[in-house]
Length: 215
Image 1 (cartoon, rainbow, N blue to C red):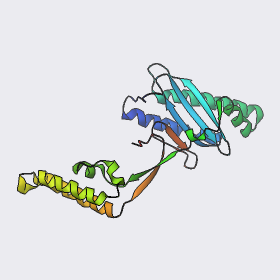
Image 2 (image 1 turned 45 degrees about the horizontal axis):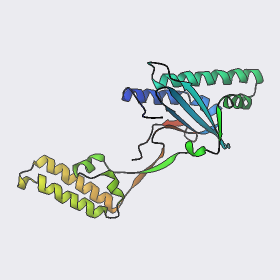
Image 3 (image 1 turned 180 degrees about the horizontal axis):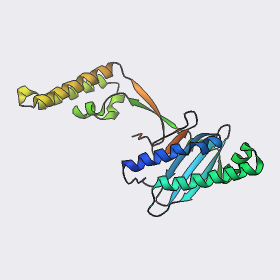
Image 4 (image 1 turned 90 degrees about the horizontal axis):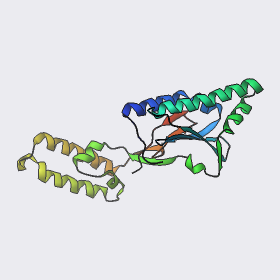
């Protein structure tokens, strides 16, 4: 699919808002997991209903000059209109949902593409890592306490006031050291589920989440 392009942070917020505004359709289709992603030419929404082994994929061409949020609304509105037309015809919600799903491309046995990956994120401020010149990946090391101490010693040599450093900068470095030392003795994490390159919907929360960087 290539690189995802957003015009600004507001574009991402607008897309999240539009996705959440259309969850009624997703609920009507009894979807457990869904993903949304796009290229310069196409938007794609994959749906995995509860109790199903099949993924139903829907494609829609991008409109020149339009944001992904606007193209998603066009796709969602078209599917919603199809659902309501079939609901009025049959007076059966499950038949309307089945009718809409069968408009998509069916993929069997590939639910990994919509079942989210889990990521544990350390509950530590990025500013603390930056002040000690540490990479977030180093937090996974079994030697993290030693790594933090060595990083602090390096920064002391550069920024201690007795060695000509700035007192305010050194104070922030010391605060970062204390925070990271405390974390290294009792590491805590928050868990996030999602994809690095797709928007993800979870039926248990009825919410979409933005792509999560896994690097």
